[in-house]
Image 1 (cartoon, rainbow, N blue to C red):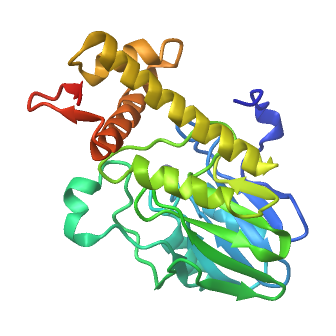
Image 2 (cartoon, rainbow, N blue to C red; image 1 turned 180 degrees about the horizontal axis):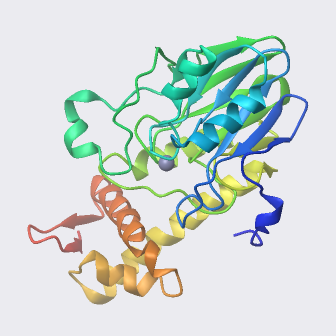
Image 3 (cartoon, protein in one colour; image 1 turned 60 degrees about the horizontal axis):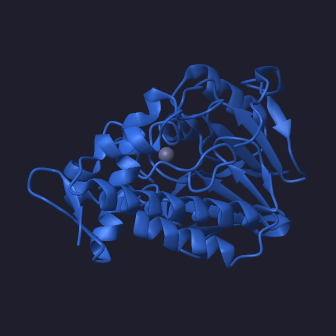
Length: 292
Ligand SMILES: [Zn+2]
């Protein structure tokens, strides 16, 4: 979406100041899914919060501890519990003596089918933030904005003093978010995107990719992109009749890194489930899909 970032501009392990209240530390976990890696944010001046501590890697934990310095940590917040976001919460909490606050763990009764390899099952928050609940320190307030879609437990955090929003994986500067059912839900995602459109944030700090200014324009573009994808699926089914998801992916994601085709298939499934709920498409018993 944006021009590729020069890795020299994205050093890992170093605190980069982005605004009076916001600094970031990049974790050393680049991949096709995490872009240059997970970005941990440190919010505040005299006392701080840490958002998305990232993977449990010694080097990254040491970098976060150095970025915090001697300042008290009021909370360690997680936007969601994918393995590139929350596993460092517990070891960091032990070192800096802070509570883990933020998204709920996945609902336990359906942990089985919902949790896949991407999930951090070890996540244990001290306090769960419901939509609209806040954590505050000296000169900063972070408010939870429930944004299910990428995962069912996803939260964004609004920094009211700077009209900034930490968007986790809900909106990222470099790519659209992976919606992988059953925990990922396209209907919820589109509703959560609309929620952001109705807000007046002036900047987004995503967990992956550069900060986004004029963020509503990006959100509108991403919603349009999903609508286009949905239109492609409907047209494919019209043209080919009863079809399998891999055939749709091969047709619709030409030119996309094949390593991402699995994730693309999950997104197509998410669209189909959404279309099913709206009575537009339906699955057959053998895994193929048709229009209604
Ligand atoms: Zn994620």
